[in-house]
Image 1 (spheres, one colour):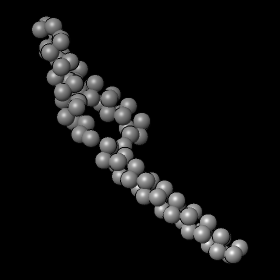
Image 2 (cartoon, rainbow, N blue to C red):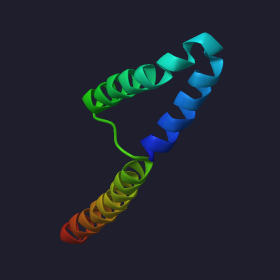
Image 3 (cartoon, rainbow, N blue to C red):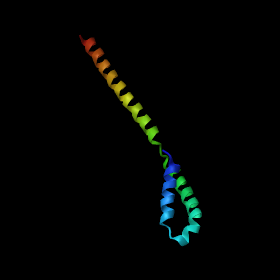
Length: 82
């Protein structure tokens, strides 16, 4: 997740909505908004989409392995009773 690209797009759109008389405040507003938004996102402890997808893949692999082990245990138990 490239937050700088998202922030730049957000700030550009925000600046375009400002009245022309307020454009001189644009840089100060952008700086303050960026700092506040960065701090908020850091507190949220977010992960990137790539990190999320890696965790999903690892969980899927673990689930498949667990199912295979459960089948193997069930087969061993049934062979034990025979």
